[in-house]
Image 1: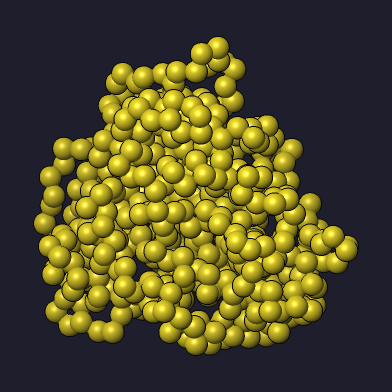
Image 2: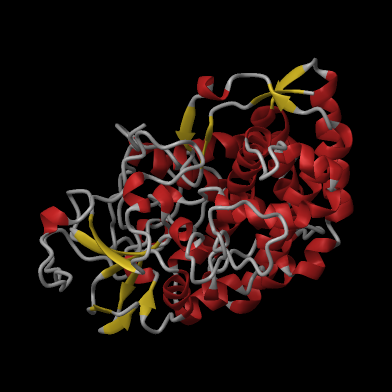
Length: 459
């Protein structure tokens, strides 16, 4: 299947902040485009871009990114990705219609870590809006330096491993309820719609304090945010405005009457830190989308892997976990490593601020750098026998949640949800199996991860 490219949103860097209004149509909300669709460091159309200096390599010889996945299995990397194995950096050409015609694709684990951990040299904000990545970057991921630390600090204490662990009984209870409803509905179900979505949206919705009757709105808005193809710009903008408008209203109510939920924490901390209501609302909206979509997709993809892959002894991986449930935490980490988990096999571009040597290659100031988590996860310098699925692999320094200052704040929560899910499946559905032939599944990109549109299962 050929991947469809996302479209970058138009940027209006000159729009001033606008005061909040308590009433508004969903697609005409009081937010400035320079906040919602960050243009920090973005270069205008036609700006001069220094070419990557690789003597002897012409643009026509560079692979085109994002790579065509035609002929690749659901859990496999594109052939062009695999051809880059052993090269920590490779020059690629990007889709037409943007200032950056070329970039460095970073495929080595140490090199990816250097990019993520050295924010003084590699800027996230300066690369915001680069196609074919997300049309609207969540505010935490689109910032650098002190601004990033200040916004992230609004929720940092709420997502520590110890704080998240207190939520485990709630997540276990919710997961059991969702699974009970799914199993009582018949002998077959769609694991995505009937389990993964209600669990993950219910978890983050409950943590934030979003009423249950409103949570379905975020599914619609999330689909608009990740839309590609004709009309994508309008759908992206409408979704972001709608989500942020909703959050602005709820946070205004929380300011007047705080309750025991994360939205109250955000607005209270925002007021104390001098963070604007606009930024607080966008942060809240970002947490909802980030808190359910990627984790729900991971549940489905991990189940697919377990139900279609064999270990070295020819035993189905799911059956192996049934006999060794204590391996679930390690299995979750290994599946986070091996399942393609980012847009087109790469994520979160950066821009070099100075000339720097990376992986033995000179990257010049202004050039785009794109870390590839999926190739880094197969770096033989870091992982012994990286193609092998090893539930006891330790250490396992994958990049599913990025690294450095921009590491996903919700990583402890996602890990816990995945562990709870698969421990529950092993206990309640030891005979879990696909209810459709793997070749009959229809695959799609959700904007973050590749997954089947539905995963029919029986038990």
